[in-house]
Image (tube, rainbow, N blue to C red):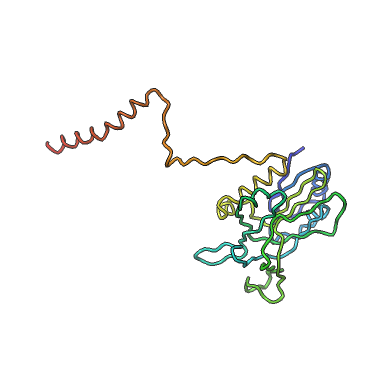
Length: 250
């Protein structure tokens, strides 16, 4: 009877009993937010659940050297800390319209699976630029730079699947919901999580709130003692001056 479930970066596979329960929950109109790490794409029982809804993992580490599509600092450039392109429709539509920047790091790729049927809608939510590439395996790799044989082009980093009341969101990054990603994206990933949960739970988008700059806006006290407090504050420097003069004359 949960409104929605979150499976965040599992480090081991579900049991067959757990995957059966999860699939049964989804088939009755359940909602799921799933994130997976690039080195945990071979979880077979979990894959059976996502495959039923037409979603499939692509093993490897995605990197996007496209202009403005990754993060960098004074220590270097990090092509695997990506600034993805948001879909203009679907669960992240409002963020795309607002120009929100996200951080999708250490990500594998996703693709539509072999299963299709009437009523099942599969849609990409986050994609790379066409300059991205995929390191299919990191075993024995000596560089993360693009090499001959690396698959290149646009990759999908997050997808959604809908069927009736069922909704499934899959983000191919095990750190997408972390505090670090939220900080790097200046709150963008927090906004993403909020938007996704609102979408899964059928909650309305939160109304825009105007920020109040407390450094510029004085806070007025409504207390009856406010005039007395103000008078004391104004008199304190004078008292300090008098005491100082008396002390120096002794």
